[in-house]
Length: 410
Ligand code: GLU
Image (spheres, rainbow, N blue to C red):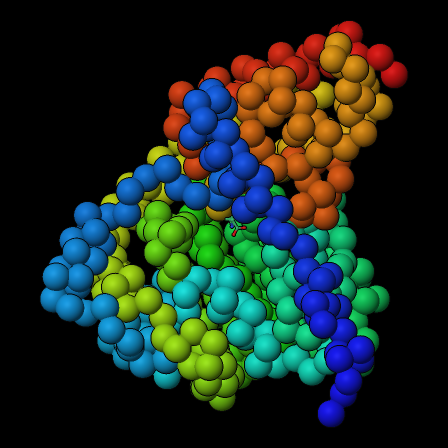
């Protein structure tokens, strides 16, 4: 038995001490708090639709509560829902999954972490092209792996030669995201195939986060590497969920889909960690996937209008630029030409974070600084907000940029 002196009472795990708070959620939380106190802020932080879920989703949830369906379900989720999810992936993505390939999780974040826990041994490396969603590196660390960050090319696509250089015998997987949060870029078909073939040749698993697959705009199509290179289906995983395209962020419904051996381990991990996914949200998700498609499409069309509005608005502002928002609901703005300028309040813009801070503090427009996504000269706008709010924000953004360019001092 160790003595009291050697037990390090009150200390915490060194490994978990390194885990960062989610930047997106913490900024979003602070801004929602300020708004609740009555501060007039245009909130473009949240990757969260401003719509309500389809009516059938709400009705199914109410009915499920009234019928006493809020009990534990099987750990991997209700077989009926797993079946519907498999069918929807077959129809919409083109991967031949069955219910046994699917695990329903309490949000796609948990689906990704459990997928990583199932495949990583301590020290195993996972490639993460960046700019990337803020949670990816931390998720890999939580699962005992080492995130290896690989810069994207000038088109914000994973850079094949940089990936090749970063891949070594400890590399086991790559974590990708198309349509991308935070860039709004959708991987083109030929590129997606090339990436998939490279992974196959290297023996790497792909965790393909396709959470925004139903949200692409202006005729741009979503492509999955698992569909284009079917051999990958034996070793790779697909991630999706209800949060974004069905406006069900707080319902926490995410899906893991992959080979049956991987799905079985994810299910076992989940049986120990969560017990089962939320029973009421599972009933609601079944209704949404079966009867809510028209409302999902109506929301997509609204996002498409907003993507055009925001792209044209940014294009009209001299001094900043963004890749065309092709999918998801993000616009990733490059402010490199403002670096080094000092505004009238005395704040010098040394990064996208500084610019985002000025926008919030002076102009009352809340966005997320690019460092959260690994891009120092950028900031992210979520256009999951009304057209009126987006128009107001664009006006303020335009005048902030022109003030900086005309009166800003170097
Ligand atoms: N994925 C969303 C975002 O990037 C929601 C917040 C989060 O979980 O990161 O804004």
